[in-house]
Every structure is written in C-alpha cells, then in structure tokens.
Image (tube, rainbow, N blue to C red; front, side):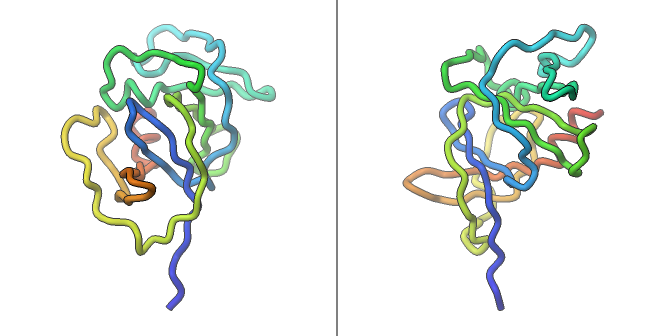
Amino acid sequence: MKEQMTSIISFLINKEVFAFDTLKVRNILEFDKVTWVPNTKDYLIGVINLHGNIIPIADLRMMMGVENVENGQDTAVIVVSEDDKTDSLLGFVVDGVKEVFDLDESELKESVINGNTGLVHSFTGSLHKNDEFIHIIELSEVVQEIEK
C-alpha cells in the first residue's frame, strides 16, 4: 500500500505554527495596503486588487482569537482558492510564512490543540517536526465561516 503524500505550507500565527494544503495556495504576497470595506466582519480587513481580481482579505490571526494583532516585516498574505476558481480567491493575513514541505499522512496525529482558537475549530491533525508542533487547518471550514 502506497503512503499518501501531501504538500503543505506552514506559517506562523502568534508564535505557533499552522499549515494548510499547498494545492489550494495561489499566491503569497507581502502584506501591503488593503482597501477597507465598511459593514463587514471585524476579521475581514478589506480587499486587494491582484492582477485585476478583487480579493477579500481575512486576518487569520483575528479569526483565531489573537488579541493585539500587529503587522511586522514578515507579515504576509496567503491567497488561496478552495475550489480552483478565480472568483473564489481569498487572502489570509498571517504573521509569517515558514516553509513548504511534503507531509507523509502517516505522520499526522490527532490535533493536539486545546483552548481558544477563535473561529477556527477544524484541524486535519498535528505533526511534530523540527521540535515544534504544526497544526494543519481544515481550509474548507475556514472558508465556510467567512462565507456565512
């Protein structure tokens, strides 16, 4: 039986490492000016224009209940598409992008997260790599939360 390999991208939120499937990632951008949109949820901080596409930007840190969110020089926007359609692009602000690596699904353990993760409740699992835990976020659940 062949082991299932998945490529994932890891990133930082409040000094913790999270990740999701790289096949959903379309761009990684430096955090820059975001155009504010009134009457949206707090964590939807605005929109950007990327190659003629208007993309809503959600602060994943705020969604995960991080207080006093600050942007630093490593703050980035990870642009994802849940269903491979240009009109469903969505950007997530994170504290910094770490690395892309292959995940052997046999390494994946049940999520070790406990405590407040804000609006992000669904994790595919966790793995231990390079002396740190990496928590795999179930991206479709986060996208559904934003679309509510």
